[in-house]
Length: 355
Image (cartoon, rainbow, N blue to C red; front, side, top):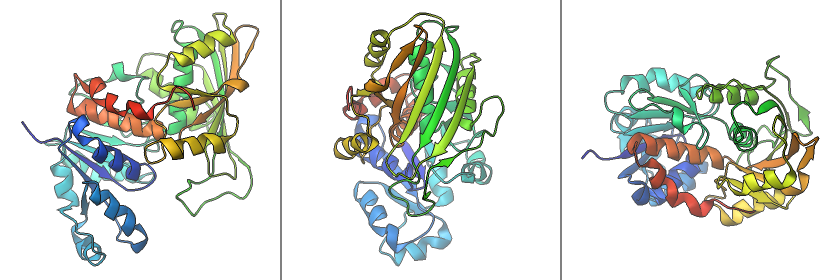
């Protein structure tokens, strides 16, 4: 039996916790080895890389950068090409645009060995869009080799649509409108902080921002054509994204019914909290690498139903936690096509019914 090796490219806000999760749960996930690519040798990143290596992950980089890492006391074990060639699954967590570039420069050349390649939310067009629990049934074995995990806010949006509007029939949704109130840069980042709330443009006259457009594309993999529109803004906070949602449905509903739907979905957490710092703090104290892996955290006090068919409220987007879940789920699908759902149950301790 061939060894199961997962290779992560990048050590940023998604890459670092993903490498940690894969390393900590590799036995339960049936993974023999975790490798990761670091592009630049920096003293400021040495502690992070060293600790990932202590967890069992193996460092790789470009051949010409070996000396730079060795001078920091960090010993790379494989070159960029070697690490991709020997990997069963490659997960690209590089900044926007690099995923497509890496696909052309590397990934398409190693299809003979590697089962699948995964990119993150910014890499539209990299492959079939995917979100755990939304369109698993659209995955086609042996055909889907390139997968794009949608953004954390798109995960949130799609989970609300599927739970509240599609659970009563595919034609139940009349309209969905969303306002993404995004946090500024991540707490780990020191640049690109906005000094004041900043409103966003509607780049698409049909869907508004990419969030609704990506959500529509995701549901299209299930042969659904949904009426969705989104807006976005950024606030001068580093805590969490917040999503305001409005769903108009055909079937009459009530607050009690929608709360019951949330409670019956183990990928959704509910909360009586209304402050993002308190939800963020819960993730910091109880999550893995500070992440809650639920798709969304719904604020119960904000829910409203008008005319029995107009649902609105606020929810919090876990800090990339849902993207981490989908990245691991699709990795396990590549490795264990018929049992991946069972394999990822080891992550259940980081799913919460209530925050």
